[in-house]
Length: 386
Image 1: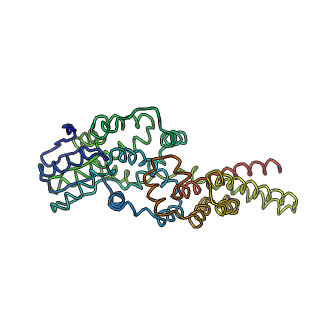
Image 2: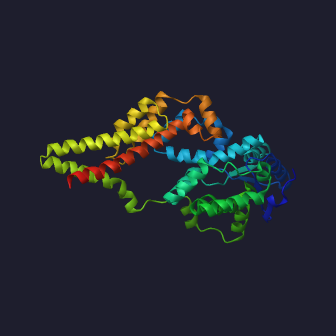
């Protein structure tokens, strides 16, 4: 295939942008060619340290990673990240190429030629947290629906996507139209950040920047405009804080329930206290257990969710899903084959049949079930007393 000439842009004498497709051998060859031609002092790549490590050592995704995600309450984030990367991995498999081959080629070429390497993308964890926090409930549903149930009938020319930078840009624009908040964080903010980092590196010498083709036009425009202020850069590296209402909302129901139970105890209404306690325990336990059951959780994970839910629902700093996920990881630990298969994520059913996917689903569904149980039990108890 011929190289798309629009994929190479000279912004200034000391800045050249190369727009690539992350699943394209042709893009990888273009990177090598441009490094030889431009002879840069610095090769800048659209990676952060975590993504570079993941590309260089994909087998590093292991039980410890899963366990850490569960313990730190990051299972939903890890699941979201896996789903976002799934389509790219699938296309790479269809082309017979490793996703990120263009970026790895740039890194390896820089090392071979003893050229300084600069990682210019924002920390992927910050990006994911910003996009998740900025999306509203319905936008999250829309994105998850698109990731979990893509259009099966739509014919996609994988070769065209891999080699046509304009087509990739159009796909990025479609994302922006479909989910504005996601487009803002994944595209516009990263254009800003990439341009800022490239400008900084260019103060130290000639820079060849290897970036996704979908970012090429946006980064070029940003570089031709005024530099970002320090305040804007700091903002791009900040995870939006929850407002006071959002912070206090998780504590509202537990506070009310504890207050109700304390009131009944102070009034000596032991019968009502017993009934309310039983309602809280049974509904919380049943909902959490059922949600873990429907995703095929291990019996001990189901039991863990049932036991933990009535307690964690009264303490927003804990979550029933953490205990259910930890039990799933302990008693149905993923094998090496499961971890590798999950990285491919080429079929939706892997979320339910693959042991790695199941650990994440059990964690997420345990939390969802516990929340449902609390919001069903709470109003029932209040209704029976007042």
